Image (cartoon, rainbow, N blue to C red; front, side, top):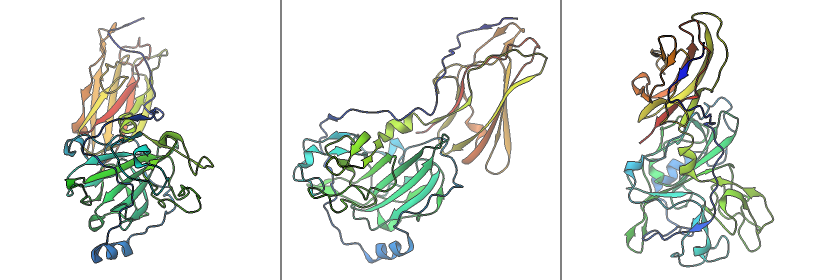
Length: 383
C-alpha cells in the first residue's frame, strides 16, 4: 500500500564532502600582524628538558588508530578573542621582507587560521588520530604538534597546532589521541608593536612533512622543516607548487570549513524497497561516533536541521565507552497509512565522552511497509 510522507526531504548528501576550495582574496585585519617565523627566542631550561622527552622526528602512523569519524575545533569558539585571521588570504598591512620566499610579507598567503586567545588557553585535538610530530622547541615561535587523521574513506588529513607554550606540552609523537583530548595547556605569549598578539596557528592539510618546501631563491635548503612555513607564495595553499614552480605540490584546506562539513556521520542512506512480512528488518548499520561536548542531533539531510522519516520504525542503540548502553526508538507509522516525519531530535543524553558505537535498525511494523527512509545523520553540534 502506498503511503504518504509528509514534508520529508528526500535529497541525499554525502557527509564526507570533499574539502571546499577558496580563491585567493585580500582582507583588512586591523591589529593582526602575521609572524613569518623569523623570530628567535631563548628557550628556558624547563622547555629543553621537555624536548628531551618528546620525539621531534615524524613517526610512522599507527595503523590501529581510531577513524576520525567527526571533527571539532582546536579551541572552543566561545574562547576566541575577536575574529580569526582567515585561511588563504594575504594581509596588505604586513611590513618587511619574507626570508622564506624572498618577497614582501604582504604578498604571502596564509596556509591556516590564527585564533587569538589568552596564553592559558588549552588546545585540543580536532579529531581522533595519531601524533606524528611533537616539538616544543620549534621556534615557530613556540612548539608545534602534528596529528594524522584517517577518514572513513581512507583519506589521510593532518592537523597542525603551532605557537604552543613549550612548558605545557602533553602529547609526545607516537601516541593516539581522541577528538577533544588536550595536546597542550597553553599558548606562547606574543606581542606585536606593544599589542597582545597571542594566538594559535592551526592548519588542516594533506601532507605530513613540509621539509621539502625550500627557501628561495636557490631552493637548496628547507624553509621551515617538518612544520612548514605556515604560508605560501605565489600559489594558493589549496594547491601550492613549491620551490619556484619546480614542485612538489602541497595541499592545505580551509580548516574551519573542513570542520563544519565533518561534524556528522551518516547512519542510513535514502532507500526504498518492498517489505514482505510484519516486523521485518530492512536495514541495519553500525558506526563509530566520538562525543566530546555539545549536542548530538539526529536528523535528516542536510544535517542537523532537516526532518527525517522511516517506513515504519527506527531503533538506535548506543554502546558507550564504559560498556553501558542506551536506546532510542520511534515509530513513524500512523494508522498503517501515513508516515509522519520527525523534526531533528537531541539525543545527547545517550552518549558518554569518548568513542561510542551506534547501531541502527530500520524495520516494518504494519506488514505493509515499503521499506523506505530518508538519509539519516548524527551530528555533534560543538560549541
